[in-house]
Length: 177
Image (cartoon, rainbow, N blue to C red; front, side, top):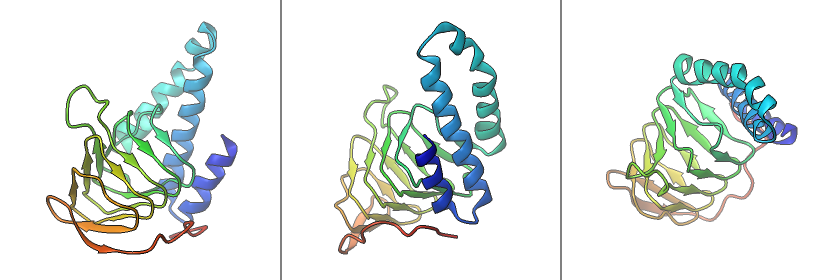
């Protein structure tokens, strides 16, 4: 957990809100995993889970359940209005901005996107359904993505369309912001 958190903090650079959200999210994930082992830990973790819910959901306006699978190096810029389904899978070194929705097309919730490594998601983008966003893709601001996005693609619009294919950029920089 600490290596993943260090990667998140390193990539968030001077982004204080992103660092707070990263620490809260990774701590909540650790509490959730610990609570699976026995009933006493399940009871003991309740205050931490409640604090996470208050801090992240209500204060920051970000819906990011601790059960969401998110790789190291996760960056959240501005956080407000962010909604990520617990069934979504997010790769390493992914950057999201405020107003982003990553989720299902139905109430069932298990038809969620898989976001590759090094993806950059612009503000207000919506990514829904059982789709895959390839490594190093860029999702433009306000894009509505309902189909697979190939690696290295830049997509914009509603519905999203590819405006450029670029070569995979490789690993994300150590720090941004």
